[in-house]
Amino acid sequence: MRYSLALFMAVVTGWTLSSTVAAADSSIGTPSDDALLEQMATLAGDDAAARKQALFDLAKTGDSRLETFLENYRDGSVYLWNDQIVVCAETEEDEDFNELAPLTHPLTGEPVLGDDGKQVKPDVSDLGDISPNRD
Image 1 (tube, one colour):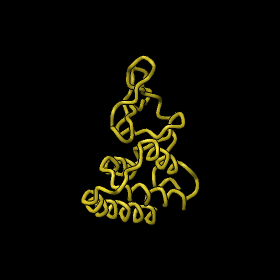
Image 2 (cartoon, one colour; image 1 turned 60 degrees about the horizontal axis):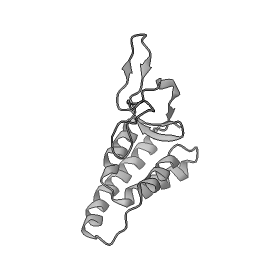
Image 3 (spheres, one colour; image 1 turned 60 degrees about the vertical axis):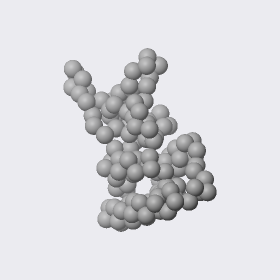
């Protein structure tokens, strides 16, 4: 667990430093949202080396939206739900005392909407944990 936290802090520090450089160099191409989401999905895998590489690759993009994502990841608020990477910072209880997870998009922070146009709030037991210290 200490190794994971130290690695995470190194990645965030590197990202912070590289984002300043990337912002100064407009010739650096930024990956598409789909490419970023694909990299994020790697964090759900069992291969620790692949997860480590995904963190470095995400940090190297310099995309400022990833700062919040990486903080959520560190805090254990990033999950896998229906094969999608989602964020749930806080849970809610319904009238039957079920613990529900209001989901947001990992890049935009916008609510994930269901077919009814309302924010999706699955039971927390339906979420797959992809926090950095799950090993």
